[in-house]
Length: 344
Ligand code: GAL
Image 1 (cartoon, protein in one colour):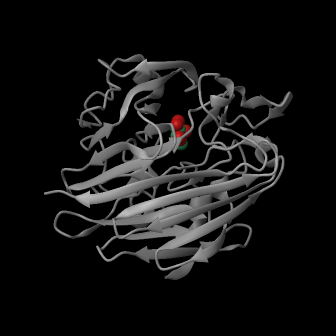
Image 2: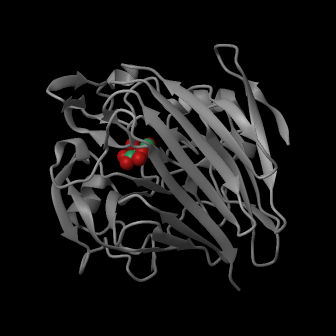
């Protein structure tokens, strides 16, 4: 199903594409920003609950700056000092976060119209041409992102890109999840599990130091289900610096594997996150402040949690971090899955 989703300041008419499965799940995605706008999951009683924060129209997505449901690129997360060297050339990016470049720096992918290319009952593919020098990055890149809702209750996001020159690519989805419902309030009582023995320690500006710090014995340990709020305000350097959880965890193993889980006692809804990427930024909405959202909701600090699958932040400056370099003509192809069920 397709319907209008408002008009951008440039006069572009945005659309909203809705998909349903046979188990009562429903998702809606927009060509404005290739954003995930709605995600309905049946709770333990079978009542549909919208578990992602968002806005009512493209106009609101254009105004917003907290990345609800956003597709982020060319390089998600931070690049220190907004500059990097590739093939003996220095590239200048936009410093938009304490002198560093965050989520592309400028002319954000989530503030552009994407082209809806292939539309089926269960999937939509959005395409974006990102030209050479876009946001300061080298090389033309044709990007496509497919959102698919499967009968296994998965929201599958497939990222595909082919650069024409050597460049950096690190695409992610910045959805804020609240498994008790988008307008419920804080996620502090919801429980999180992570398949990670370590995280990338970061400085006061959230730039990794290069150290893979073991989670053992720290509030960063989610190897057993733990309430988000249990230790979030602990006097632990990483949490003090990040004002809560806002770090990259090193996902154990390689290839497609489970990275994280979250569950709500209120609704019984459980989300499992799978990815083939090495890292996941678990961000607990520490900077949300009276954000006017969809259907009159007002989102505040820690009302949602993001699970941004990614190459590690600032990997371009760290020899021991993989990616996000990609060579001309090589294929960038990665999948992240958010799978749902409800438990009694
Ligand atoms: C996260 C980032 C946070 C914050 C947020 C957007 O990915 O790690 O520090 O900038 O995006 O508000």
